[in-house]
Image (cartoon, rainbow, N blue to C red; front, top):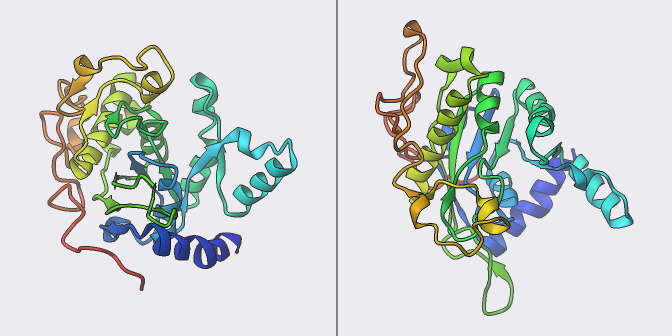
Length: 281
């Protein structure tokens, strides 16, 4: 109830009136059943704008600290996140992060849509950065498709009146990707890395971003801050990565033999489809 109330009375009107982004390719989202929407990340508004304009409910994880509510404002934030159905995510890394995907797994088990930013942080300069393998683990463990999403020009800026807005902001949804042929290799780190990079390659096709093969956290806060990243740039996240072998009888499920994006299993292109902007029903 709270999700619907906040969405239609607050967030959707606010996003349309102030930010006015366009949503393309919503027809690529299945009408029912679980799926992971994997997107690049340019601005904090990405987590608001996409679910506000989509017809189906979308659950994004939020860092678990926001649910602890140690202060009055913290308790308000924790209540709001819980009320709208957001789930906590442990971002400390290692086994804690892997086990922390449980709440998202439950969303998928219940047939819902889960949103995730594989880069793990907002891009520091607009480039696409290396992704964490959680998206691959979810796809294989939960046996759900991954839907690539591109945020384009969604960075929020101030207009002449000082109000927040986007300049030609677009959210582009690609066709679902099926990784079920690798479902028996979900503990193979090479498979997890290839799937993650393949997802990002499809995101890159939609967004047109240059790709940098390092984690964004290192560039923002770590040893690569203010460093020359030229040596880490690649044409594609899958460049030089072979497609992992699979059981012959399962087929390649819409991926070519060179490890680069190919037509997804539910369409003939990797783009958003024939329809242009998707409007309310």
